[in-house]
Image (cartoon, rainbow, N blue to C red):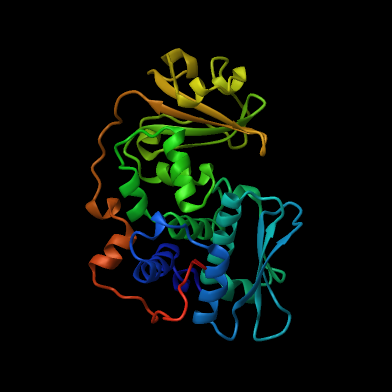
Length: 321
C-alpha cells in the first residue's frame, strides 16, 4: 500500500466522531469524554471482525509510551499496550495514538519488515506531538478524535486568550492532559501564544500558535539548549496562584519586541513546568482560503456525507456509560 492509498487521519477520525455524535448526541462531551479503551475494542470488531484489537493492557515499556502489536498467527489479532503509571489524560492520548496506528497503518505495520511485530512509540512522538510520518498521522488522528474542533471551538472561541483554569476545564472535558488540550488550542487560535515546557530552568520543548510563529514569536529547542530568561517564573521557581493566573512581563523579560502575559504552573508528578505566553498586540494579517479555516468534520457534515457503516443499536461506541 502506497502513502497515497493509506487511510487519512482527519477523515477517519471525523468518520468515528460523526458516529459518536449520532449515537450519543452532539452534546456528549457535556456528560463524558471518549472512552478510548472501549472504543478501540468495539470499533475494531465492527470494521475488521477477523482481525480486531483483542486486548488493551498496561505494561512496562522501557523507552516507550505505547505500542500496537499483532499476533504471530493469521488472521492477525491486535493488542495495544501503554506504559505503566501514566495519568488518565496521558493514557487516553496514548491509546488514541495507538488506535490511530491500527485504523491507519495496520496493513503497513504487518507487511513492512521494519516493524518487528508491531510499532513502538516514544514520549516525543506522542506527548510532544513531534513525530513524523506515521507517528504524526497517529497524533493527528488522536487529537481529532478526542478533541474535535467543532466542539472545542464552541467552548473556546479562536479570538479568546484562556488562562490555565479554563484550559484545565477543557482538558477534563475531553479526558486528556493539560498539555494535550493546550496543543489542540494552539492549532486554531487566532491569538499569538506560546507554550514552553521546561525543567531545571531549561526548555525541553516549545510550541507557538500559527499567528505567533508568523510574527517571529518562537524559541528554538531542537538540537540546542535554551535556557529560560532570568525573569521567567519557572526559572525563579515561582509557582504561586499569582504566576498561575498570569504576570505581566516587559519586553526585555523574554527578549521579544513587546511585553506579554506569562502564566506558569508546575507538575510535580512529571517534574516539569508549563509556561504559557500571551503576546501583546495582534499578528500581521495573512489572507487564507476559507477552506483552510474550516474543520474537516464541518465539511464532512455540510456535504451530507453519512457514516460508512451502520450504527449498532445494542451498544454505543466510545462509552460504557
